[in-house]
Length: 400
Image (cartoon, rainbow, N blue to C red; front, side, top):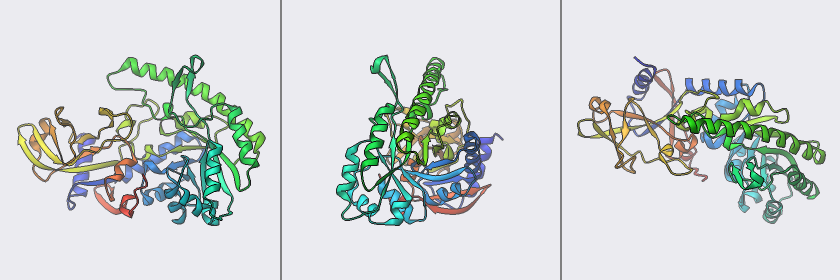
């Protein structure tokens, strides 16, 4: 029996008493992935990206492990909820325009001490001040550096369009603006190199493209390491008590951790290891988060139909954003239909061994987005469900 076939047998046994659709997290794989992330970080703490987990119980589980410290959240409302739930170090990774949330933040000393907000423009400071509604708490601020690689005098750009702050001078100027502004305290710098950490460099069947990606990433790493160090020096000249410099992502942990100026690494997808993280030479993780759909039809030889399945991931639309049939191995989508909102036909010889009511296991393209489809995660150890815990959605929260 292959390792994948053994996993399928375990998952089927563990969930035999449960009806699909359902979602699971294999805790043995989850814990092994956490250990690998911590190993690659080389002693620098990992701040857990909550958008890639979206389950409080699993955030608490990983933060209890050596090598992990703090949460990187994705909305202000989520940040406040986590702080109220006992998470005392929450970095909001994106600027917010949530005026109600800012009024709550600036009016509550517990929230203000636990949450750090992201800023890359004086307009963000203006919005926060306008939203205070009498709140006088000092707001902890982090500045985001644009990590994109610019070539040919800026005519070619590689990387996400995030912060407008690209040069050391630009970041230092905003740091000075924060320092002059009553009610704010600059505590950190963040720089997420998505074109390095979030792009696989070993694309199956595309050797030339893979080589081009590796060359781009090597160039980008060198450029960013020099620029990030210069930015940190410039900002520390303005704010010597800077608490942290955050960088990296699942695909670049060991490279970012090697930079002396970086004090912590942001990562989260590496805990679940969705399908987009199969194409990396820098690490190999174990798929930990899966979902199962039930067989509801057998239309013909070599075909079964499962209930649901149309769960595309965010990003540029394409086949790589779709969930992938994983267990039993050898099933594929019908090119005429793909995964559907209510039903999904699957083709391949394994279909002939599936009966109505059997489960087909899938991997989502991205990590935490799976949790927007399910209210609970069944946690599996060995071949037993040892706990069932709510996702954010299961707790009544859909923050985005």
